[in-house]
Image (cartoon, rainbow, N blue to C red; front, side, top):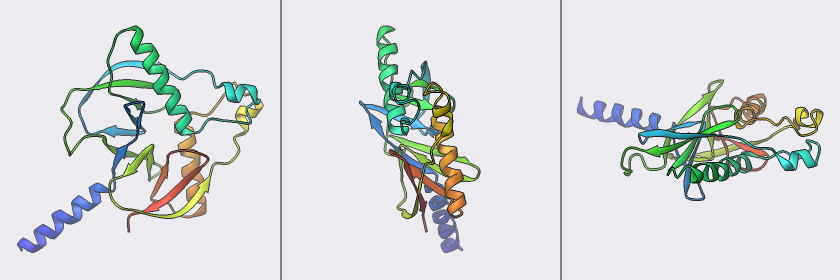
Length: 195
């Protein structure tokens, strides 16, 4: 009976670990992109995305990847909050073209520092700018297709991080049924498995 209970608890913990990620740090700030910090926090400001000069100069042919967009958000957050003399620990991106600056209200420890619970798009778990906590295997790689909207708008309209993630999930599920994808930079995402 005790062995069965221990096995069940171990199985449930393993299941939960597939939904946990260790987030990246840019310029000393934690970046929570389409995931939720485990550490308690408060929102101390909001910042909108800026003009994508590379896209404008190339008439929408060149578009920033998630790393570029996140770096721009961090820089803009530093700039805005420095003027207001507000300290922050990281940024939190949920959707659209803005981020929230967050400050942790709970001390970091081994169970919450840089850890986040991932989100899902069409039942596919997404690790964006975050490394899965549990060991995984890369099953396949998918590439982001050319996005025609920036080209048609001469680089004025560019996809959000959320739209990029949705495109990767769609491409991954066309290739094979993807339970999880991982995307940190460039034009490729990995289909991963915890088996």
